[in-house]
Structure formats: C-alpha cells, structure tokens
Image (tube, rainbow, N blue to C red):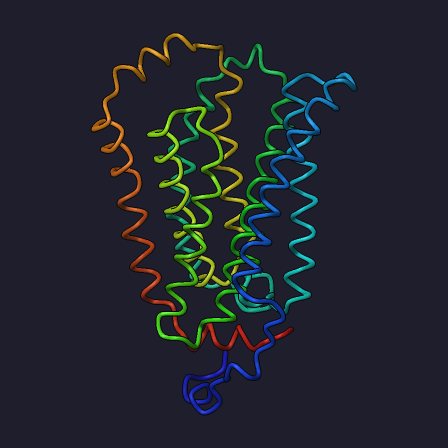
Length: 288
C-alpha cells in the first residue's frame, strides 16, 4: 500500500472523484430496491404454492431467487460505479482477519438451535433450502447496504470532516430502519429488532473498512440467519411462547437488548476510530 507520506503529497480532491448520482437519490434508490424486493417475494410465494410447492419451500425459494438476483446486480453496480476497493471486492489485501472473531461469536450464540432439532423429523432438503435462502439474505443485504450504499457515501464524503463516521453510521441506521417493515411482533419487539440490526450494521460496516473484505462478512451474516431461522423446524409452541412473552416486562426486554448490543456497539466504535482516512481515500480514487 502507498505510504502515508506519498498519500499526503497526493491527497485526491473532490474534483477527481467521479460522483455520477446525488447521494440522497442513490440512498432513495436503495430503499426503493429493498421495498420492491419485499413485495416481489410476497408476490412469488402464492405463485410457487399454486405450482405445488409447500408454504415453506415457496417462501424460501422466492427469497433465494430474489436475493441472489439482486446480489448479482449489486456486484455489477459496484464495478460500474468503481466501488470495488471500498466495497471490499477488489484486490486490496485481506487484513486483520482476527477481527471477524467478534461476529463469529454471534453464530455460536445462535448455533445452539442445531442441538434442539428432532432430526428424525427434519426434511434435509428443506434444511438445505433454508441454508441457501439464509446465505442469500447475507449476500443481498451486505452487498447492497455496505457494498453499494456505504461505499458510495464514503466515496462522496470521505474528504469532509467526520465524513467516514457519518457514512458508516448513516448506512447502519438505514439498515436498521429497513427492518422496521411490519408490526406483527408488536412495537417494542420491532424497535428491539431495528436496534439490533442497526448495531450489527455498524459492526459489519466497520469490519469491512478494517479487513478490506465483504464476502466473509456476508457469509457470517447468512450463517447467523440460518441458525436463527432453524426455529422453523421446531414443533409449534405458540401458546408457550405467548405465555413467556406475556411474563416478560419492558425492563426485561431492554436489559436483554443491552446485554447483546452494548459489547457490539463498543467494539464497533473502537474499531471505527482506527479506520485510516488515508486508506479510505486511496480506495475511493482507485478504480481497478
């Protein structure tokens, strides 16, 4: 990598960075893309069920098809907008791999679901479909939100004061708010989900800048979703869950979120402080 001295002598200016779209319009386009993907999946579900698929297979087949389609489109757009280095899909070295141990702990927390399944009743084709569907979630969300949105904002604003921080935080807030799409679990549960998603987005966005690689982050995201969604293979226990939820107070919910979120938030902010503006700038003006 170019030395700091050399970078300081040739700091790029806004004039020699190509910005084809307004950042605000670009962000709105990303929001529209996510909303359209949600409605497309919902529209495909009944079509696939009418074709003979079970409800489970229809849902996850639709999800995988739409998510992978958008993922490949995002990869194309990343290259088209010269964001490959900022998006972690370029030829910069994969560094600080040990930092990925932090999100891997999330997988260990959710992997206990593997030991709670009754494998005598599990359909392994459905299990494989769930894995592919979950992986597609990680690829879709990370390549769109980090590969496109965060990288584009960094390219636009890294030269501005606090531009790197604002770009990463704006992206993670958008990531969280885009999970705020239904109220099926109640307002408190939805707010909790948004909070956790936003902090995860902050951690993933920071790790992208610190490690120079997006694909491992997307795979970790997909694995976390896979283990979390294994609940779909458990026997229905709606009445028990309803009783448990009724016994939980708002304070209980907030404490649970704080215990999960606080370490991730602290870790992310510490790592974000270590992001080098020179490194970000070099990636912003590199087109290969």
